Image: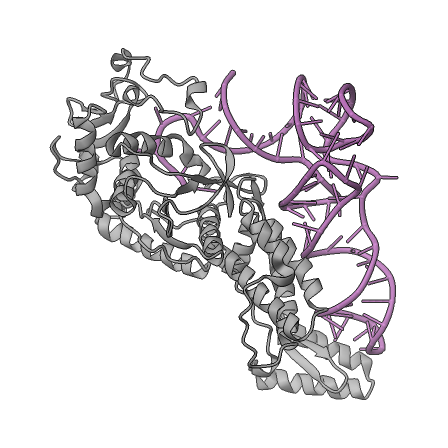
Length: 465
RNA sequence: GGCGGAGUAGCCAAGUGGUAAGGCAAUGGUUUGCAAAACCGUCAUUCGAGGGUUCGAUUCCCUCCUCCGCCUCCA
């Protein structure tokens, strides 16, 4: 498949460096609170990338970390009166539960930052030894940006107005930073009183790792010096990923990620999502409003990953209708196929264009459009062609990670006796052509949450949503 | 100020140097006692504005307008 690469700014083919397995790393969540749908846009798109590669026959190795030591986890664990470990474990568990609901494939490896402190210290030591990092009087260690000429390539920093080691005398003007240059970033933070018991011994004294370094160390541990793809939200391009490149290429000597995949931020009601505006939604918030995780997933893949996606409650309603239409059509297609038919086709049939869209820079909205178009074609097919079409549909749905809602099976719905009695009364009134009575009873049923639909020979009851 | 992205029907949203996918909503029809559901059909001479290049531009170039994101630890 082809995918846009942030570093080269071109679309490139994705194929494993080692010829067998596509190895990629995604910056995972900082576990200090519930993940919101903005976070999940990124994780869902990464999931679709993986599924698309796998559907195309490429084996993957997916690593996504848990950031469980940083300013926020430490701060919030303390105000919660919990140990850092207990605090982050709780949020990690919630994150996993949400991921499962959204149909995200679990990463093959999910390293946590606190469990890799030795690897991080080792990498810092290497950087210090090579002259790319220096320690300050207080026991912190900083990366020396001027020692890495390529700094800024990912985010086009060289064209920006940041000082790249040009303000060597800035030290005196900044009380907060014991840095040579304002733009040097921290690799190891010396212990501060507000860190409480959250510190680790190091050659530079007690302290804790800097955020940027955590990812670099875990990547080296599980993917080595060079790997296929690195991914995250756009906000991570600078400084996080820029810093990772600097650290890792200096420490490891090689080329870091071969490809950079960044997902654009989600907007809510046309603006930035934030707690203060009250438009920061979690899966739980949306569940309370009656929306399913799959409906959320549908909305999240409803726009191209490099374009802003405007999330609204209306879009969730639209997603619900679209999913239910998909389910009906898929059901009709399946009904045309003889039971027991084994679906083994390797092609996509009428869903070929949908697959092409997905393979072309992960065009998920294009693929969704292709599915509906393909479905219209598929309904005209019969026999083996219909079976092949169904197999193709299942493949493309699996690549998108969509699970279709069940077609309501009216036979399995449990109807309370009181409702049943009302329905019988209405049916009798209707047969007697007593329309007034019939309509009154139907309204009464609706009031109690039941929808009565008249058929030729009988009626159907279903819960009204 | 710097860097980057976006403006396509009521809403969401693809796409292409050759005349605009798809979904939601709306609307007409079939069906129904009336509904609901379902099914069939309709729904952008036009792609923020103005220039330019071209046989031809929504797609390339220029200018302008509007919106959004990032600019040191937010996916």
